Amino acid sequence: MHFTFGAPYFLLLLLLLPCFLWCREYNKNYYFPKLAWAGKESALLSREAWLKMLIYTLLVTALAKPFVYDEAGNHQKKGRDLILVLDASGSMAQSGYSEKDRFKSKYEAALDLSSDFIKHRFDDNMGVVIFGTFAYTASPLTYDLSALDSMLKMTAVGIAGESTAIGDALMQAIRTLSYGKARSKAIILLTDGYHNAGKNSPKTAVALAKKKGIKIYTIGIGKRSDYDGALLETIAKESGGKSYAAATAEQLKKVYKEIDTLEPSPVRGENYLNERLLIFFPLTTAFLLILGWVLYPKRALLYGGSQ
Image (tube, one colour):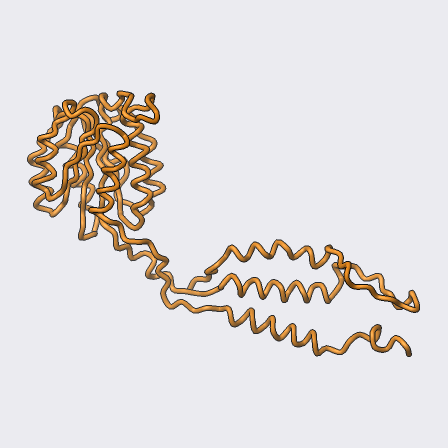
């Protein structure tokens, strides 16, 4: 069993607790015929102040909705296995791809948009493959999308060589997907060049992807003449995916949004099992303390002052 709060922001009200000790009250005046009856009690030693603080803390705790739950269901993800395959060859260093920042290279613009795409995948199990002359897995399949994003930002143009090994990239992505257990598996391939390196042909990789039921979405970025559009369309069509052309960063953003629609990620929800609210306990305790405070006989200072 685990303990948490449904509305923890209400706990900020506890910052007002010091006021019970040091905030002065201007609307109450007490008059004593004899100064001996007026005690010199410190605020820190006042039982009444500490009682008020305890009651206030209990009420705030109840307001924050405390409950206990079984965490078993939180690890049962229902997303898909998804691999992002990014071209990091030399041609990706070209600038002018983003209209908002002409100094950004294609790769930097693609990284920014890919990062935003990753943040919205929620419960998907994602991985990243970087390729150039060769391909490697920059991040295996993981639900820790913030760590995945950090790994992605550590890559750079030329990190895998200057050429474009599309076949090897797809084979590496399929190999990485083999460790996933989701029923739905997909690859998003982003490139700006022609297949001109590597040991595996794109045809072989697509045949294997088709056999394993893996969809491949292809995205050609930059000018249409810069990349092999016909090959990308064939890869997507034969695997059951879809091919896109993104001449600018703004178009790439729209492509990612469409893929997000075609391959929707489950809406994240806190899957608390056997949830049991604990509001009753602080409320009951606070009520009993207030009742005792009201019914407790007043001090002799107030009722026996004439004796």
